[in-house]
Image 1 (cartoon, rainbow, N blue to C red):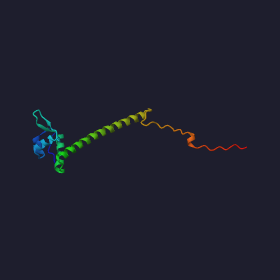
Image 2 (cartoon, rainbow, N blue to C red; image 1 turned 90 degrees about the vertical axis):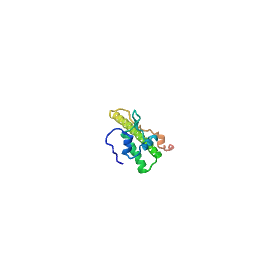
Image 3 (tube, helix red, strand yellow; image 1 turned 60 degrees about the horizontal axis):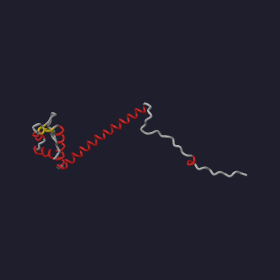
Image 4 (cartoon, rainbow, N blue to C red; image 1 turned 135 degrees about the vertical axis):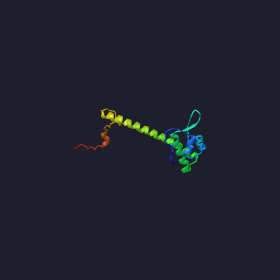
Length: 141
């Protein structure tokens, strides 16, 4: 599906419908179902941004090329949003761990006593447990 847009801006419903060869009612249906959320002007005219257009392309790919119905599209979009949020959380966590590691490495390089893992202490084993004592012989007469 070739995108026919060239500039960054907002598109009215008629322009978007013409670009993608769909009826404006289809766009309105997608909005009612929560698949698209175009912004509105003061006069209540729908304006589709570049982000809305990209989302529409994804929706049309699912519907036209893969035969997914509206309910399926909604589920796929929700799963996609959850995955993106989980990815953001993972990236944040990785950055936190990286920062902590660098902090601890810098402290260690400066001779700080703080360590991520406590230093290992030598283990004392009681001699009685280590080896059994030999039986003593009775003294010779």
